[in-house]
Length: 448
Image 1 (tube, helix red, strand yellow):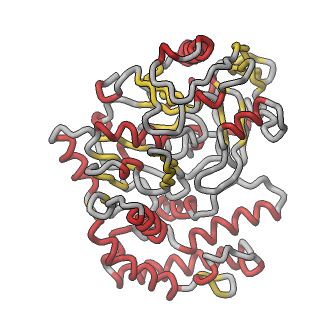
Image 2 (image 1 turned 30 degrees about the horizontal axis):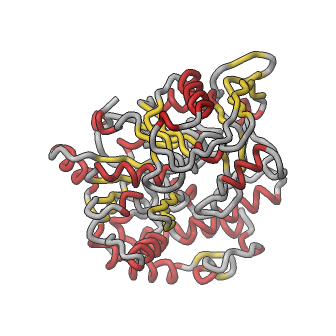
């Protein structure tokens, strides 16, 4: 299951809902920059690293090797769930191959964004949580990984090398001594540098608690599949934030697309039988970067303001307001192509209740030519001008509807047109954040 826009499509609710028929749920990329909100019996739960399937008793949850892990944040999340009465530690498995996010990664992330701003460049719009720098260490083959926590001397030696490199960059390239870092980061720092002792001591304290959850995730998933279990792979962020296929450079640092479920969890692609794309009934984006259908979402009385306020569009992880705009079917065509989508789940249909008319982007004008699919990279996308179709809105409420036939006629016309333009059938429709307010048209566990 993957997001098809810029993230925040409502994946958490759908993972939770689909977990009813799953034996295991797997996160395969990203870090605690993800934010999945679940609403169960009116109570909200926000998850960042732990798969959303944790809310279903008895289901195993896996953090695959493609995820970068901030161990302290993982335990904050575990303890919060345990306070709410959710059993976690005996059901959660963390791949020993996961790269660790450490204090210097966050310091680098923050310092780089500050340097871009000082230099007059547009900020990337990262969450400032160290995700990108942790992936850089992975690709450069110098990362500290979960398995290193079991070997204190090895961990210490690698940490010394990393700090020598990154502290040099922090102080002499990024001017860290002049920056005011967040309070949570200051205990690790002195004179602009990240201190060995603070990082090492915390890591060793965390190691003993994490060891029982460390696992060969690839082997366990393959064994579960061989035993006939249903496995659900949970993507984070969204396709247009994919480091290869998104609005580069305004992207995240991992591959968010369906193909990475195999590499990020250690399974063969033949185990992926159905690819479900999650998409809002409109578009949102957090952070910088092009957004062809963006509206004036801060102006009261406008459709964009309606989406922003009725949809409560604020980031789960950052609290930043999400930019809002019309549904972009040309964008979704690109997502369908990249992911090989089997079906769509449309979320937040109820947010559009009460709008007199809707606009559906079916293509763009780019440099005087008409195109019907989102181009690659931010530079070309920035120059795209949307081509819209106008569709009548509806006044009746769709909140809580669980039968497709009971949706207002214009809501069904809108959904039908999305299917026609994108070429992807709609399998599910979500009509509120609540777990049970879902219309099922096709069960993904029955295949494409």
